[in-house]
Amino acid sequence: MDIVVHEAGEHVAVLQCTGRLNMVSAPAFRETVDQVVKGGRNNIAVELSGVDFLDSSGLGALVGMLKSARSAGGDLRIAAPSEQVQMVLKLSNIDKILRTYPDGDAAVSDWA
Amino acid sequence: MTTAMGAHRLDLACPPDDVTAVHDFLAGVWRDEPSIGAEDRMALELALVELTSNVIEHAGAGRGVSCSLDLDVADGTLGAVLRDDGGALPIDPAAASLPDALAESGRGLALVQMVVDELRYARVADRNEWSVRRDRRRSGH
Image 1: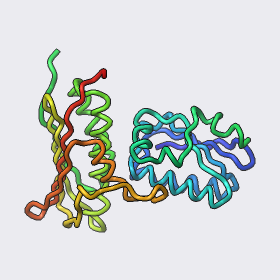
Image 2: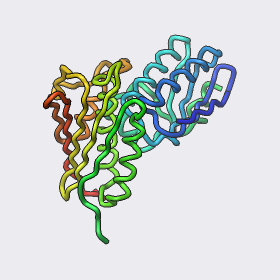
Image 3: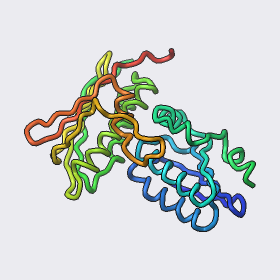
């Protein structure tokens, strides 16, 4: 998975992800979000339109990063999930705890 | 148009192989089996990647694992068997359920249960054997 970090404000970052979020890519994803949060950007929007596969390893990483962001006083939101990602979020009920936005701009509009 | 309908097989040695091999294998199956609808493809890919991840993480913990994945495409059903030479797992897949919302692991088998019509685990002659069956959904409804 490729991750591009866009600094969208002093405490805001949009992570544009492409590829698969599974057991192969989840550790690097966690590490990237950790670094962004440690750098002071604790409001994170994860833009997922380019992610065509998410599984329980990816869900675990998203939940872990949500907890990291919140414990740093921020939050984590997701944007533009593909059909497969929406299916997995719904089956796992994670759609109840991770708020979904139509795109990265909408996800950060009240943070910027 | 003729449709390839039949058996597909993938052998894995982890490491160096990982679930990327399963994704690549399935991409080839979808090309060979154009009659499989998008919903069935998403379900089967999730189920088989979850099961393989589980095998790599648990059955192969610390020493690696070899496995084989057999996928059978039939008119009405998709069936797959994943066999590995890892340690026995004290698992009852029927008991799999979603953990607390903020848990960071433990969702894999519960998700598999939701996207297949049958999931079975057996220990057969020093090998673990995971079988799944999904009844094919008619596309376009």
